[in-house]
Length: 116
Image (cartoon, rainbow, N blue to C red; front, side):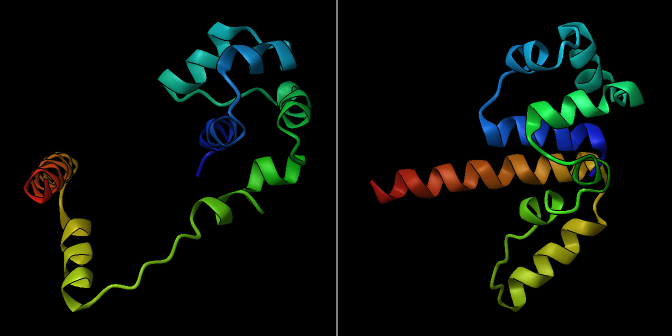
């Protein structure tokens, strides 16, 4: 996970809007928007302000220690077919992954409708 991804992950976890974050850090909303839309990384002089607003240490923000592990710690018990499905998914290109996800969502919706 990148620094920018961590920032937006933390904002989501804390229920903080980009506007709230802008006010707390003194960083222009357009700059924060550029981080998200264009994948820009915050400048080094803003790291301490960002850490203070998000209540994390610079080490946590820069390395993901204690942040990424929480986000990535979900574990699933998969049977053989589930493991095969994950392996096949990993081999797909991004367009095929998007199509598969759309198909899976529609299939879940259909299953839910059948239960009614």
